[in-house]
Length: 587
Image (cartoon, rainbow, N blue to C red; front, side):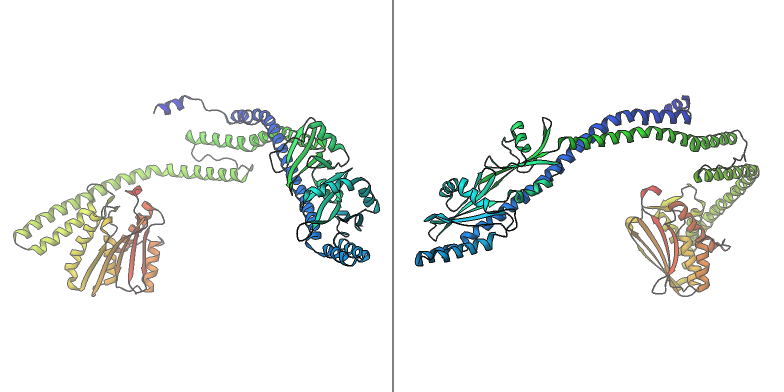
């Protein structure tokens, strides 16, 4: 009550002023905050997406490099696993035929490595004759004898020293930007017989690094020594940024510092540390992000004219029509019933509202014109209702006197019939004004009717009951079962030998009340019942009126999913089913 008085004291706000405040407070002010927030969020998101994209592409590129290195290592093992070189050497020791030794070694390394794009050249020399070098250079790469000459003149001594310490393992040697992979060929006793030296084609092995986004240059380090310097920019960046520091993460790491952008990855392979370092185009990365930020800013700024357009649209198409509806409502409030609004063409919704308002106004005028006549009719109805209430009371009292007379004369059958009739009369009077009663009380009325009708038909009529006793305390509308039982007696049995069954059970959140009789419905009966239950025909007989009223009351109380149905089951019996809800909402 206090809150209601407080609300009455407040002056309502006009719609156009509220719309303006809403656009300012809900659009323009948040727009400024939104621009700042979007700058920060988009910048962070762009940085994160850029970092993730670079790291993912760097991981992929490094994995491709590693697969090529692993492929090269596997290829080098063939020189040890395939015994052709060792067998050629053993035959040479037996017959001393150098030409056959040359043919055997050359044939093997030519077949295995000459067409492998990972190698520029392959050289083999035996420990007992180190001056004799058997070699081939690649037919698919840009290679010639110069690569073999460079090895002999500049890398031979270091290769021999490295081979002494690797046993059956594999070693990598870098000499003036030339990358060599070295392995010993051993006999059955794991004594080195020969050494195979393979110069790797760095442009092929590390080619995938150029596929990283915003690539500018790259370099690769084996065990801390640069084996692939690229164009030199990446090596200079490594020195300037100190990026040779230890790296804990196994995957690629993106750095953006000191005006440079680069990505680094460290991987262990055959006991060797391989570090990839890719220098990125710092300006291009930030130019793309800054361009995106400018685009976002322009989009946000363009929303200001959009806000003005929205306000203009709402003012013309919402505020104006609503104002006319408000003025029309005031006319109705002032007593000008039947007031009409000019049709609004702003939208289909307002066209509908205008038509609905005009129809409501006309209907309201018609209803008020009928109020006087209805009030007079209501007074007459009240008088008749009072008269109809007096007569049953008088009849009930009279029945009580007759009942006592029958008992005093020892006529118990007449007394029982009078008591049953009194019960039926009490149900119709509804003195306590209770529209909903317990199912047990409703069944008392049914029992009273069955007793009376049983006296009429005698043994020809039998009643069966199957009732879930847990439902007896559930409340149902008054007099919904007895009219249906009466209909079964009058139309189903029709005075012949017959049986009527009453079954009451729970079905989920519904209560089903079934009245079953062994009568047969004709086609005319079926059409009559359908017409009554669908309210297509107003009933004239009292029994039909009972069916009509029960169904209509149930649908009013419980909704369209409840009510009365009358059907024939598969055994040919007529089943009248009353469906009500068992929840507490209708109690």
